[in-house]
Length: 195
Image (tube, rainbow, N blue to C red; front, side, top):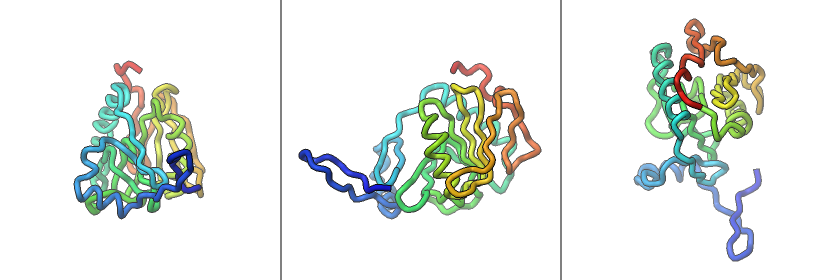
């Protein structure tokens, strides 16, 4: 990836990337508290817009459902910063995290399942994040596609791709690898939400 640049007085200038160490120091100092939602992409802080009602409602309903099927060895996290390497931190909408992780930002190996609720972020969720998560070896990644009325289930990471990608319709059963005997229909989670 090319170093990020800024145009200053008409000239391109390289931007010194922020790293995990910088982000941890900023978080410990309380500096990040007033910044709102953001992710670190290739060393650059990128603001994330607040979620609209369909996204937020589906997210909360997914959490309620997952709470009933998630094994005791995992916790459910929302919007937690996960580092993928030293200069990229993404914050999945929902993630199943190994219980007892160290406080602070997570590492990719702490995550069993990442879920994104895709509305305005669909392209990034299906392409950029899928490549990033596969490269990091995340065992399972779901994109709940609100506009497409389906869930894109990614499994079997291999390099920058997932070897097993399946589009699951809203009415078809879906179960995480960590709870294969607890399938549910995304339609049940979406019922009554105006998309």
